[in-house]
Structure formats: structure tokens, C-alpha cells
Image 1 (cartoon, rainbow, N blue to C red):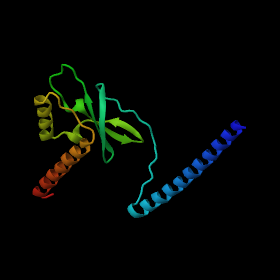
Image 2 (image 1 turned 135 degrees about the vertical axis):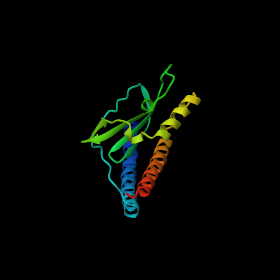
Image 3 (image 1 turned 60 degrees about the horizontal axis):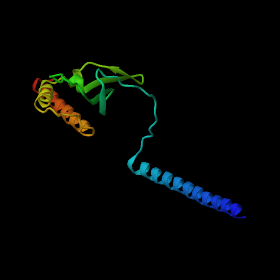
Image 4 (image 1 turned 90 degrees about the horizontal axis):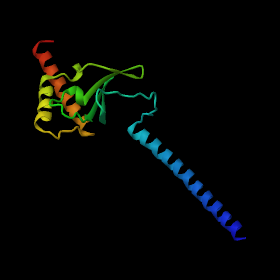
Length: 158
């Protein structure tokens, strides 16, 4: 008799939990619709699954999208290598038909940026690329590069 009572209790609890789950799902859907109405919304879906390969074994830190290009930042342990190059930390890819195509470094090939980058890694042995600030760093660098480019166009009368 007690076994039958225990199984009945289990079913009652399971039904209550399922009702609460369904109620919570409905409330979340209503909340999400309200959020979309107020802030706008974009439905995300996975369109491809692609692997990024680098020259060195590394730890991925961040990936940043600039139009149809991606800047991939990573930390690699390079052992006894004395000079760290941009290609050791950053990789540039172009998105073409849901595939990543490796690109050259013209997107981030700025003399000031390269000098600052090399000095940072040269004088500070424990330099590493943090995760989240990469987005800010690249955005700030890219924005200032565009401003310089626009200023030079204006001064040249273009």
C-alpha cells in the first residue's frame, strides 16, 4: 500500500512541476515578445559550424567582426621565440559563403599599431591578450584609423 502511495505522490509532484514549467515557458515567451517590441529583436540561428586554424597552438580569447572580416585574437605560448609578431596573436579571416578564408594582415597593418604591439610584447614578458577588451581595443584602434583616413582624405580634397 505504501509503495502505491509513494508512486501516487511522485506523479502528483511531477504534474505540479510540469505545470509550473509550462507556466514559466509561457511567461518567458510573453516577456521576450515585450522585449522585442520595445528594443527590437533579431532571431539568431546557427548557419554553419566552421573551425579556425592558426599557425601556433593557442588559447582563443576573442573574435571580432568588421563587416565581412573577422579578427581572431589568441594567446600562444611561443617558447624561446624572442620577437612576437602580429600574426602570432591575431588572425584575419573573410567570411565567404559561410566559410572562413584566411586573409593577409592589411586590415590591421598600421605602423603605429604594429610598433606599439611589438613594444608591448618586447618590454613586458607576461603580456597576454585578455578576452573582452579585445573588442574595445580593436574598435578604438579601427575608429581612430578611420578618423585619420577621413582627415587625410579631407586634407587632400577627396
